[in-house]
Image (cartoon, rainbow, N blue to C red; front, side, top):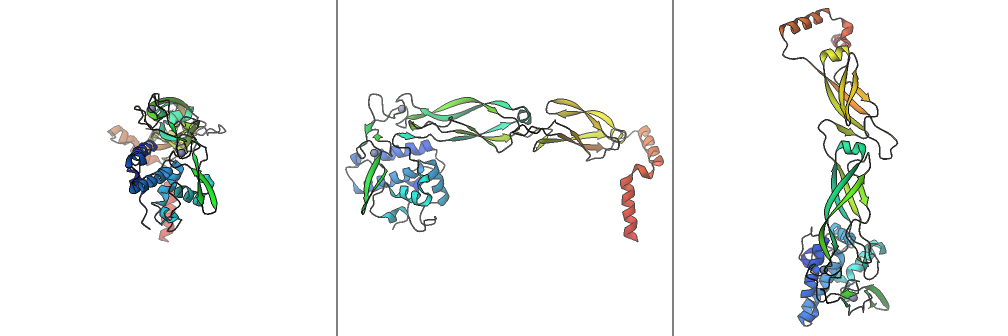
Length: 373
Ligand SMILES: [Zn+2]
Ligand SMILES: [Zn+2]
């Protein structure tokens, strides 16, 4: 049994290729190795079967992801030494399909029927400021996605020509094959279940039936959303084929760093420097919030690290049940570059200070005494 080839290599595409690139590569190869072209050459026939098998996996994002995870299916996967070739002479359209059905059950295969496939989902990241998280936002999102080609109305066939009924399945998209005593129905490998094949591809889309188009939509982002959340916008993904529905668009939320605030769940935090006299005597100062300045009371005797809450000036939670606080951490700034008068006053302050003015200092001295005895 020869070691199985890498499916991406077989298709001549990168592992990172888009679904569209894979589809295009397939159309090219299928054209090149078509029996009409090769005059029934055996090697070409085998090659075409391999390509069909590879495309069966790679065209389906679920199967592709599973294939990517299990590597090249050369015996390292959970199937254990059971590469596609070990299916022997059952023909090639089926083994991959069967392989996945065995591994993952029927759920691994979408039975949309001929001519109808749901479109691929798309995912993009969007960034929000904390201000936008606070109020909710209408965000414009522009992205590239596939649209049905106008030149061929999505059929992929050149104008004036038509997709022809697949000769192998007579348009049903399914073929029956004998497995010993059993007869098994499976997706037609020639047309991949579409039921039709394109003989003259449309020039605009090279037969793909779809063209990359810029799309801009406006999305309501709810208040209180957090980084890492995924917003689903139904029906804004890639178009399905046939009557298949469009895929969905997923927006992955990122939060931009803020110059002043950091987020801690529904609370937001910031540090606010205050002068030594303000901290000692107490004061009312202006503190920044997400929606302008607010009065903040610095308590007399505040220390560096003292936290003051501005209730309700944080963020809402997603369900709107709770509104967080703005938590301001005070930083007491020791005065620097003192002039003579300032130094005199501070010296005098030091001289008339009492033990009760500096409880921390006193506690520490108490501990030192215990250490010595
Ligand atoms: Zn077209
Ligand atoms: Zn067919």
